[in-house]
Length: 145
Image 1 (tube, one colour):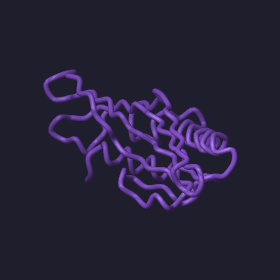
Image 2 (cartoon, one colour; image 1 turned 120 degrees about the vertical axis):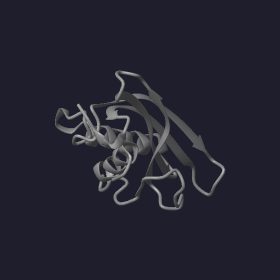
Image 3 (tube, one colour; image 1 turned 180 degrees about the vertical axis):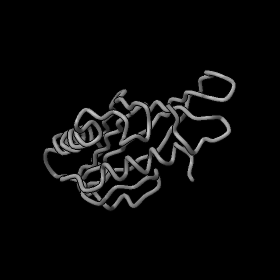
Image 4 (spheres, one colour; image 1 turned 60 degrees about the vertical axis):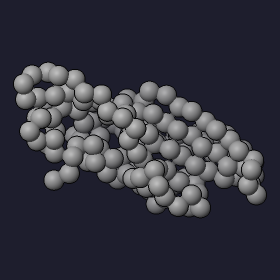
């Protein structure tokens, strides 16, 4: 079984695959084909550890959902559409547990960058999420309540 961190990334990939704007261009890695645009990349930045008891530990995983797009017009609108689709998919039906892969997920911020250095303007939207989960220190592959 994989670490809960990987399970969270994998669940995000499943949740975000098939969105209207990005389709199947979803990668659970920060290394991917940047020519496959528009696309989404999912990766973890850091994790904060808390001490709850001798064996159980609460953790906050900082996850990035990175959206990239290329357009000649309305690049901001394209990125905002992808962002809206991502948030709607993650928080569908009021579920903030990623189908039980974490105790809670919430968005913490968004950064947007635009560049005109290529044949068409390229945009990057970095959405930062915090995922709260709890594990037994002896078994970090299983989420516990």
